[in-house]
Length: 498
Image (cartoon, rainbow, N blue to C red; front, side, top):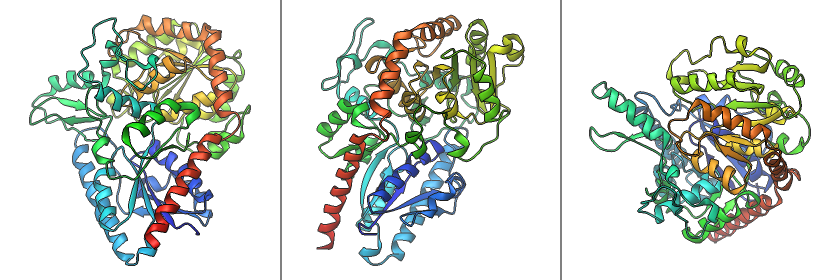
């Protein structure tokens, strides 16, 4: 352990845990010990071989991480933060000598950096902020805030100084679907005691008795992370310059501190399986599902190359029941084969949404997966020709790496800017609605699917992005930034030991 020990603290949820696991492996490859600090209910999702490397370790917080969203989750989140703060303070107190403490703590900015940074600062441990999202969304949040007030007229584009012209804001960018949907529900539920939660991408109260506000901030609002990362000595982001170069440079210039792109933080096997099927079960812990990977392969093998659209909104976000119904009718009306992954609890009910009768009506065109869908497998199969996606960052880079174009339907948080990156900057997809991201109509979905699946040029551009950024293995520019990060920490550590 020549360099010392670096702690990595992910935010709650597997979408943040998995990138942090990969970051720990990269840190260990640079001769630092990387220790992952996680809540007990997330520890079962850590691959067993992670602990086999003498330079990677896990510290388990003896408490359960809350699931963001839902009634009462704000209180649960605050309790979990307090438990983690006490645990960290006790852990650091036991390491009385500076040489036994971590030389640095990498903190996921989504939830924990503000108060966790105070604990590490108390013990003289420097902190680095980690964005598990991409650089575009972070830069766009900052630029949109600096450009406020945003009084954009219909048909107008507000350019953001320092960022590419195609990323200028329009009226549709100012609409935030999650905020408006939740606002409508709040109006219906006043007096019902409905809870709120504080994590970005979920509601937080705007004031006593006031309507919920959705985080992260909308255009023109101050990003939540600006103040909480002020004490961080640097930022690392789950992307690379080949994918997000203008946005990483903008952030470094605006923030006046090092900003490194050390990703995309995808499993090792992702980078070594170019041109072949990726088996999720070989990479991530198995989850419950109504179909096996073999079932999916057989189904995809029966379809023409590039003819299947994959539909998924990830594991932690989703549509309303009404929107799911609209989507189901659109998929039935469309003529393209589809795989639709539907998560438990979708639609906001405990039993979850299910489009009863759709498979029978669509017949051989439909495969509905309930529970865990092997997304890497589906995206790497040659029959998959499009992805109807919420544009969560993990899903976005997984599809980009396999050359699959997008029909983007963002729901909350960074997904809006990820979708803008995909559609306007990389030009490898379309928005599901060019006018209103809040109330998407069935005919727009049908039209969008047909437009995407019939467009050979957008498919060719998606393949080119995959080839340019991903096909050479883990990006060389990300390895260079990782080396710069290590040198920076080495220098800080050397100053501390003098």
